[in-house]
Image (cartoon, rainbow, N blue to C red):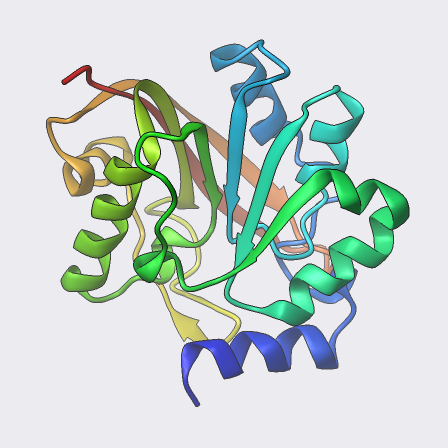
Length: 206
């Protein structure tokens, strides 16, 4: 089964609150985004946003330029249905992030909770970083969250890569200035814990 088929199956066979990564509110992500960017007109891209409730909270904060990207159209339909008419204020993109392209330097904040750690092949990770550099403005911000070194080795039946702040930043390199990192112990709907790390960077000016 290819990646797209895998995620389509997940979101057509389970409710959005039955998957391990479900959060009623993406509190850690919101806190970091607000720390880095207080302009409600900033262009924010949520990579792998799927059925995440982050978009709900961004809309409630008055953010007006939101894009949500996911490889699964079924995941995005869950979010659209939940939002109702508010979904019309969001740009929804069905795409593999490693093949994703937007107008150059058109994004102020790139947010990714739990996509990057599924990229087990170095070439995939290089394509991801290339997509980030194309999309994000010099001086813009990149927030990437993965399982930490003491996090799970698999998610949704798939192997993942685990990182600490140094090894995650090393995947991105010099064009990215590491501003900080935070850890999160996420409680799954099943009552278990998953340990995440959030790293946030500024894209260096050219």
